[in-house]
Length: 143
Length: 99
Image (cartoon, each protein chain N blue to C red):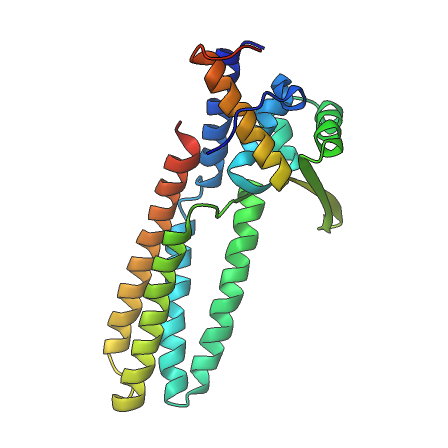
């Protein structure tokens, strides 16, 4: 096989692979809403509410279901190689929201502020997920 | 930086495209590869067996919904060989090497 033709085939297959891996528009909002449940659960557990534990279990189950649904829908699992910055950013947002919620709830109790934290966390995590898709496509899909 | 190394095992058109599909993935389901490459089950199996014998891919079988599902991954050796092969192709296209 001619080298130029082979390189074109490589670029096309890599691009198609990235397209399949990022072909789930429902992933980012589902992921964002699920992640938002973590600071809510932590805040509620800080005020000794059993609802917090139930929400935590639901969020963990939702993450598992999200991964299984993604794998079933696409048939692939993307590689995380070279995406460390995105994982760190997601961890900072999620742990930051959870720790802040715990501290505020422990000091002042639970209030409407928790809804704001949940909405902001959901939006940020959805955007980070979408950003991950775009970076993944840039890294693996276009050469 | 990846050292260019032309690899006859990978250079076959189907195996090259299979490796390219798998390069950005942790794993892919067998039917996804088959459909994307436009080949039959038996043809894909044969090519994957060649790549597996070279240590370039690993196959994992799992039962789900009472069906046996096979997923395919590039091994670290396979990733390195693929990257070296693509580097060699680039060198050839740039006019600095020959097949």
